[in-house]
Length: 300
Image 1 (cartoon, one colour):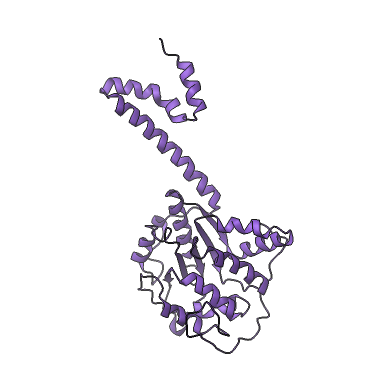
Image 2 (image 1 turned 120 degrees about the vertical axis):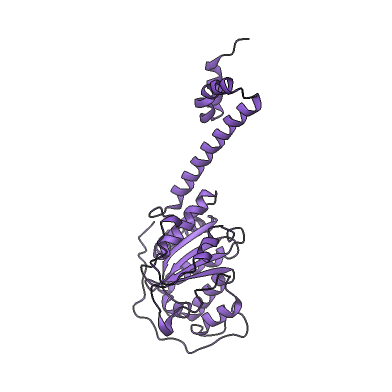
């Protein structure tokens, strides 16, 4: 029976195999000229279809991640920060923290490349088939606050809980009021040991109470969940004196319990059940009158 090319094209279109549909005739000619066997011909067709389909999936994941701009590790200027553990950063791009549901924190002052590295890490995760979402901390608060006003908080929370990797940018650049702190805590708490967070911040851990409306309890609770399984990358332009971050830039290992106790020692205002024993207490900080109040009408 003589083959019907038109029928073959219809079948390939129905099966949604565009690469095979476009290249089967061309590869058949190459097969005849180079004496491929049937298996080699089939292998090349399937390989082409797989590669093309995988690229489309990656492109959809990158679009869904909502990166402000695409950045790669190759574009990062290693000569710009004075202190950064290059081997630690490069090791993170193996993405071994993702199956462990662990977190990554990029800590440093403005302009040291924290967002660049976080975005690059998210982009690398997309290329490996992981679901990613990028959002700055204030936008997350505004989005969830607006959803709560409409009675849709639970549904909107899923937006930040579903991706395998959440990139949470610019925590600490603006203080957050109590309601905003509660919104952000829900995201971080519900992702604990369920999904990874890559977070950028300009505040050392001991100053995190100032981010959360001087509420040491919620600050220590957030740190508890973030630092339990985490790598902290310290990036510095210059020596920062006595107020430098609490963790040595030379460390490439995950944060330990002792580091967590040091971090929360300056912000806890009363014993909290999630803090490692013994409870750490200090005098309650003064009220913050300049706390950020979210724009409840704003959405992402």
